[in-house]
Image (cartoon, rainbow, N blue to C red; front, side, top):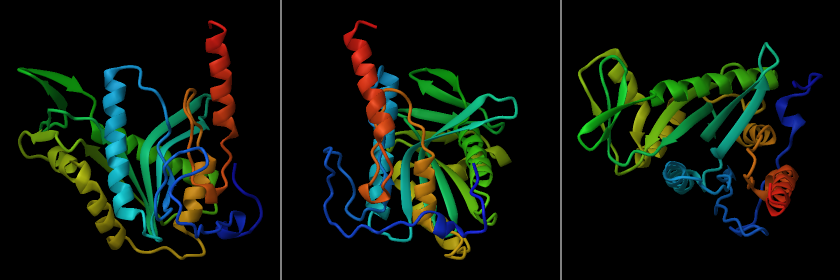
Length: 271
């Protein structure tokens, strides 16, 4: 999937900056004022209350990222990214990534989690969700986002070998503003979780700090707008989902439209 020849990355895909101030596309989707939000959240109809809560958490995080980076030309945000690749056994491996922030020194991956009450992490890295008087075990959001980060790094290095290997990848978990995280004891596991798990409104400032501390890569090798465009071109939406991409990135939405049309016809036919 890599590009042949010795052309630099910026000659592969050239982004023409958008100078419009319009914030609404022809299909009615609302986009950002600064046009540095390369891709908005995909639209889908939640099938249950858990999906609905997850959707609200993603929308909340997307709002904070838009507010912080919407007019920042050095940072580009890609929301709701799904990547696929073949593993060594010919099986399709995929990762659904809620938010990717591309800055001059690398990438920050953000996983949104709906936490309406309280969750806890003990000294062994075990997570639990509090439901009234009871505790219910839950997968570690830290391990989940780290797995996604590893997938994203391996995907970028495999798919685009022209990318510089010195880019830095960081991972963060955003919980709902009205949620609480309780850490039991002190250990490397709780310290690791405290660095990665933040309230949604704290994520954007942390990303700003990370990007300022990361060495800037050469502009001819790494440009956030170009990296974002490559990621969007590799996006593989799920069925029943419509992808919304900024017009200036000139990424086709034909797949999503045809899929939506096909599924509507199937439903009409009683499938």
